[in-house]
Length: 209
Image (cartoon, rainbow, N blue to C red):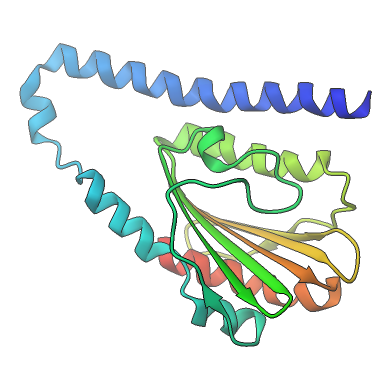
């Protein structure tokens, strides 16, 4: 029953996030039709390849993960879409309204990490996506700790740790405008992961700001 109630709540949250995204698309289409093709030509939208390159640049390099979490890290090639990062998250960013996502995974001995960068289509969808990410924590059965804020210039940042020792999980979010960077650490104790999370969120924010 508890699993069913969580699924119902998740479905409602995802629907709300995607309605915001869909509403934006319909408005944009109507505006383009009203103003004609000259409006579309005048807007300097970056090409898909340019957006992909910018998103890849926003991903943390292994050296910055090591600076925050300690140790020597190796990184895997970036990929356009993957499963949700963070033990409590029930959906990835693409499923809650992101227009584009890119992800990179890392390893250092028994520890693993992940970084997902996402671009949301508009501010309303971004605000809804942030609420969905916060709600995943409240629905989580992995004993999540308290949500701890990280001070970011012009954005929102927070993190928490969930799970049990010795394989706990840390998860954090940096959101600036319509760009999000999600970071996750897995495989250490809560005492080991918690000090690394604020630094990871801050580093992630610096790359999307």
